[in-house]
Image (cartoon, rainbow, N blue to C red; front, side, top):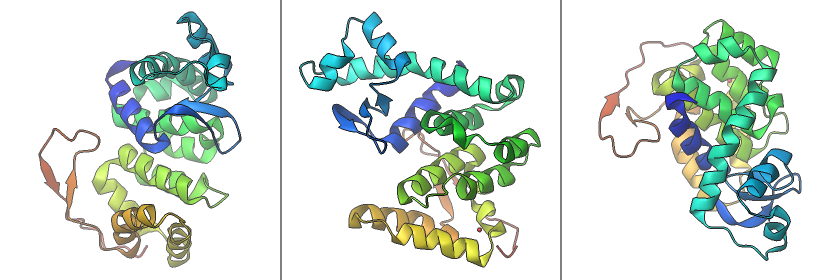
Amino acid sequence: MGDYIGLSKNLIRDVEGFNSDVYKDSEGHPTIGAGLKLTDPDVRGIMNLKGIDPDEVISGNRKMNENELDDIHTSYLPKREALIKNRIDGDLYESLPPHQKAAILSMGYQSLNNLGPKFMGRVADSDSIGAMREMILGTNKQRDPGILSRRFKEAEMYGGPIDFSQTFQTFTPEEKANLKYILDDIKNPHTKKELMDKYLPYIEGTPQQNFQKLFQPSVQQVVPVQPELNLKKP
């Protein structure tokens, strides 16, 4: 899967969260690890090949450790990626840089419906900012704060901190107000503060000037960002 696999795994684990106990996802499916649906035939097949009965896991009679779940996740990603390639132009996908493939894989991991024609048209045109607009504005019709947070992270992975910052300058005042409204609807006060602290400056046009390299905490280099654009803003 190339050198983007590490980026993909880190991003997916970040946006999905991780739980070694079985829980119900938003659609009621029994899920474990980093968003592994225990009703997914591919997940079940991988588990069976590794001598793990998924129904025993669902019932709670078989506990799984982090290494087992990481191993299953690593085996599952290529199968999910194959579905993504069937959804979009495989040659286009293969031509993308690692960070963009990682973002698209994360989006398709959640739902193939996220990879719609408008978004993929922007990708095909090498329009990074247009693609991020579609990611943020076009794949969260339910106005879910959790999905919005996920799209922000995927968009920042896709475009990098400079393009991510400049994307907000293309948003209209109404689009920005809608984003603020969705963030303000977060129920958990700790999560709300964390996301507001990070993303409200982008929405209001006052982002932080320093960015740590994404998902590589061991790298200490900080890149100063001084956007030259002064466009009026979604």
